[in-house]
Every structure is written in structure tokens, then in C-alpha cells.
Length: 330
Image (tube, rainbow, N blue to C red; front, side):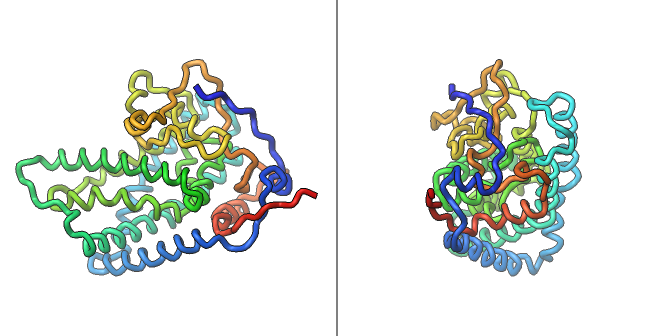
């Protein structure tokens, strides 16, 4: 069992620099390259969707990933958090308010980006490696293809998530998600938009089964909800089902305030963590684990006397573009 870390202080930005030994410097080239790749794939995606109507396709994506079903589910769980929370905090806590801004940005900016990136990536992949698309196999029911695709997607999610923790250029983007010190289901949406580039591999299973089955929108929506639920500010472990499905108590260990932990990386299923010996299951009597990043390398809304939501939001999106250099100790 991993030892519980100490509670994080609330230093100001200057104190954070002193604690981490880092300060902002010139532009960070890997993030610039990722941004360029995202722009190129988005352009390819727009071209690929031109015959179907890009705007219509984006609206469909927003309905699946940020529509009434997902929004209703998230808000319902958020209300449950206020009744039986793992960590008691005000309804309008700073973390909640900033994550609401992220939720809005997810629907208006990130989901359209996901649709365009996915279309551009898939279209290019079919041209380069057409053998990835399986031939028609009428003897196998469509639901079998969809079930296998979901499992493969979850496995690829796990693998990419591991890469986001092990590769510094990807961690710089993913760290925005881990910066939340007031974890809730709303934190699902706290993510840098460019992190979506690393998750493009999850489009391959859907592409591969394209001649045999169309993945229903309801399946994608359900998967999105199941992927959001582990961020909830509740003590749920799911009991025996927690050995198969990612619970909020299980995922909170992944978000503990110690840094780049590569444990409990699963999205919906625990298989991949267990197979790689990266699964740390919660104890029934465990105290609530503090979340966030030690030393606050990413600016957070909890710092300072007054909340500056717009400033912090924009700074968090801009931070991965900045090269860090050592701060001299004088």
C-alpha cells in the first residue's frame, strides 16, 4: 500500500518557483510541434468531412460526448458529491468553478477538435495502411466487433495514459489535468486540448471494424460517462466490482498529490493495471487522499487571496508552451 502524502500548502506563484527550482523561459519546442500536428490533422479532418458537412459532424460529436446524456450524468453525480462527498468543500469551491469553465470549453472547443483530429487521422491512416480495416466477416455478429473494439479502446487509453506520464513532452500537457486540488467529476473536463493528439490511437479499433459494425453513439456516450465517474468526489469502491471497474476511490490514488504516478492508469477497466502490476486498490478505511501536483508546477486557482479564473484558465493552456529553466538560489 502506498503511504499517504502530506497535505499541500498554498504558496503563491513565486513560492512555487522556489519550491520547484523552475521558472518560465523560452518556448518549448515539443509542444509547438504537437500544436502544428494538431492543426495539420484538423485541416485534413475538415477536408475529409467536407462531403458530409463538417459542421453537422461536429454537432453529432458534441451530442455524443457533451450532449444532454453526458451533461445530465455529470451534474447528477456532482449533486451526489454535495450530499455524500469524500472531501467536504463548498458547492462553489474554486476548483468546481474553474472546472465548469473547462466543461464549457470541452463542449465548444475540445469536442470539435476531437472530431476533426479523428477524421484527419483516420483518413490519413486508411491511405497509408488500408490493411488495418478488417474485411467483411458476416459470420460474426456486429455486437461482438463492438465489444472487442471497446476493450481495445480501453487498452489503448491505458497505454497512451502511461505514455503521458512517462514522456515529458506529453506530461507537460497532461499535467494540467492533474493540477486539480479539489477533485470532482467536473475534473474530467480539465484537460489541455492538445493532449487529444496523443489519444488518436484509440480511433484505430473503430476504424478497423468499419466494414463489420458501426459503433453506436450510445456506446460511446456510455463509455464517456464511465470514464468520467472515477473522478467523482465520493468514497465509492464498487465493492467486488471494483476489481474489474475503475472506482472513484481507486482513481483518486492516481491523482494523489505527489507528481507523475504511473499507477492506476485505467479509464474504465482495471485489467491493464493489474496485468502490468500497476494496480493499487484502496483500503476500506483509507483517509481521503489529497490531490494535485506537489509544488504547484502548473498555476492553480486555489493559490492567492482572490480567484482569477480567466487568468488561470488561459495560463494553464499556455503553460505547456513554455520552456522551464533552473532558478538560481541566491
